[in-house]
Image (cartoon, rainbow, N blue to C red):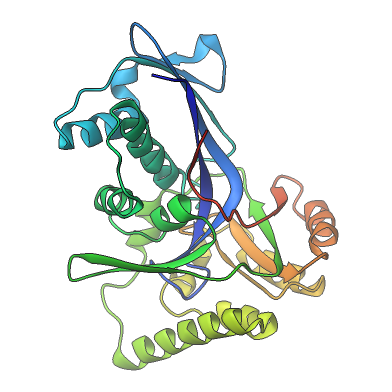
Length: 294
């Protein structure tokens, strides 16, 4: 087995009203450096002192599950894991780890998995494809499970700057889901789906001003989650003063995400970092490659 390196991007799901169906890959990465070994070794953040119990490691469990699905056994490897993706911040850390585990098994066991199989396996584990699809394919992806099939489409690259506001607190996805209603009225569902349609159409046509406006009018989840997100109104209102198109919750939160005119992002970051001293305010780019193996 040759040494190889797996890289999987972070992702931001929903983009406002694209609830559980829209996700954007961004240039923060989970990376695995894999070499053959006489026994399994997992190290986190490149530190020999951070050797972990491989049997309890989430990525190993996914790899083992994937291998067993094809009646194969994993060859022992040394795996050094590094990650820019903060945990429990609404940036798809679990989806990135799932894709990394599937690809680890794919490489070690020579499974020759298609991208469609990886998407299906990942969605079965994660429960929905909104983070899995962009982590796998890159870019802005709209995906949905319909009649036991996963339909998806990759949108054209957006000509915007992407800004993330990452607080130093975690928010578990289960907590963010528990505040959502069990059902919606027909009027709310109709309005919410219409808003989502306009967001997609405006992004496709390059009308980012309209897209930003409609991103902030979600009915499906943001009104219910806003109180769980530190500085929700402050970030949305203040960022608009510096010219952003729109600001939404990233995934289930607590991170928030803005689209801004191309070239203006660094100025927005500097202004907002001064305002949000204990946050990481980052200017990022869309990742357009998704999963890579070198």
